[in-house]
Amino acid sequence: MAGHAYDSHCPFCRIVRGEIPSSKVLETDDALAFLDINPVNPGHVLLVPKSHHLNLTELPDATAAQLGSLVPRLCRAVQAATQADGFHLIVNNGRAAGQTVDHSHWHIIPRFSNDSVHWPWPHSQYSGDQLSQIQLRIERELNSPPGDG
Ligand code: 5GP
Ligand code: ZN
Image 1 (cartoon, helix red, strand yellow):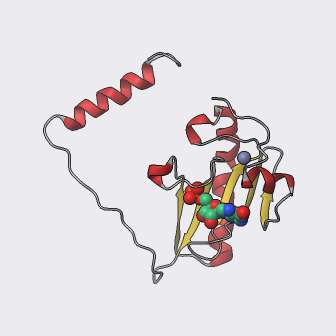
Image 2 (cartoon, protein in one colour):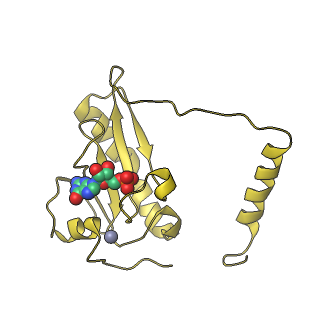
């Protein structure tokens, strides 16, 4: 499903239009960055495309490229302004991954050596030929024409 310019039920579309107030830090023709209202740490920024797209997999490549080109500068600014020791760049995609707002957005979350954020995630191990099977499946998906299967 392609995105569209505006969804009146979407909080981030409404922020883009100025119908909901936000603390903006960067604005371009295609993108907006503003402070998350409930930050993991102070300086937590959300970067969104101005057009409404459900999630990352629905973003046109050109829109993703426009957003991506802003990320290093935005991250440098967040890190310098907050004196953070590091940061996360995170996209929660789908309910299972914790996405709560259905307008694609990228989190930039400053991290401090002594903060109380839990990291890392638990890691597991592959068994048998699971690793090579998954590698094959992903490669096959990448090489199949759009809309095929
Ligand atoms: P998600 O869980 O979908 O990856 O992240 C959504 C984020 O949007 C949350 O961190 C939440 O605090 C933030 N958020 C939700 N509504 C608003 C809002 O109206 N204004 C701002 N600035 N942030 C919001
Ligand atoms: Zn939207």
